Length: 327
Ligand code: NDP
Image (cartoon, rainbow, N blue to C red):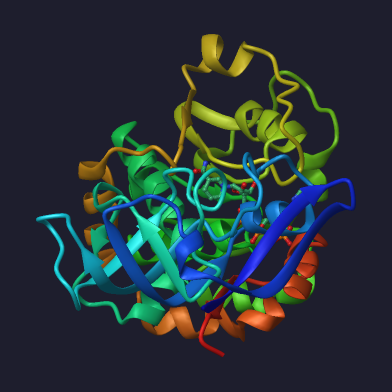
């Protein structure tokens, strides 16, 4: 038996509980991992609280990322004792995930624990941080270099936002952080933000085009925010869109794209091909100051994951939450 969070949905309703799970119930997979840490991402918040239709099969162990050591393997790429990381691939949505002491997975989904990171640091980054790196790589692909001008990060106090601010600042960009939590300005400045702006200026319906300001942007918020960010992005700038914290809609016009040549670059971490994942993790080892991870992260035990998921959904969590599944 091992401990894990189990989400169930039946006539008694939708519920998540910390419970003892029989190892025989683990799903199919060629690698069994003794999990050390998982995390709480926005998607895990949706899954645990039931606020979004993330879980596609019940019962489900949530947790879209994990780090741990291989306990059994019939995959030639992995042997007992290897340290591995998992992000995405529908784990925690359609396949049992990381918020448990054990996970059984497809070896093809795993990447070796990146050199230079402890297991806890890898989860301090987690899916949110690896997605932030994918967003920065997307901006680079579209020619957004530090000399081009200011880069905006929305949802800056969140997991994706915090890591994006830290990476962009280390790379030499002038980072403007948009947030609803002005009280966290010092935190964002320590991560490297040059200026903090109130997210309210982006959150209401806006004009098709506004004054050009951003050379690029990382947006984890969607909805009116993304529309207004595109409308104020400079000629030939790029916006990497990865999230929907404000909403899934995009009430925008084509004006920024057809009149200013703005690129809207979509970023998905879940099905992202392995070569891009490996590149993102090696870039994180180079372009993120590991000392900042302490500031960005707070650690909880598995028993605290359910109440903390509700706080995350209420926008009360700053940065990243690492879950020690063994306490
Ligand atoms: P967090 O909950 O950590 O951060 C979200 C942040 O968004 C909040 O901290 C808040 O920042 C801001 N926010 C919340 N509600 C609103 C609102 N109504 N209007 C404007 N801003 C709001 O989540 P994550 O960083 O883990 O994820 C962020 C988004 O990115 C989520 O939508 C998630 O699903 C998505 N995501 C997508 C991935 C992909 O593969 N495409 C991978 C990972 C995440 P502040 O307090 O600073 O205003």
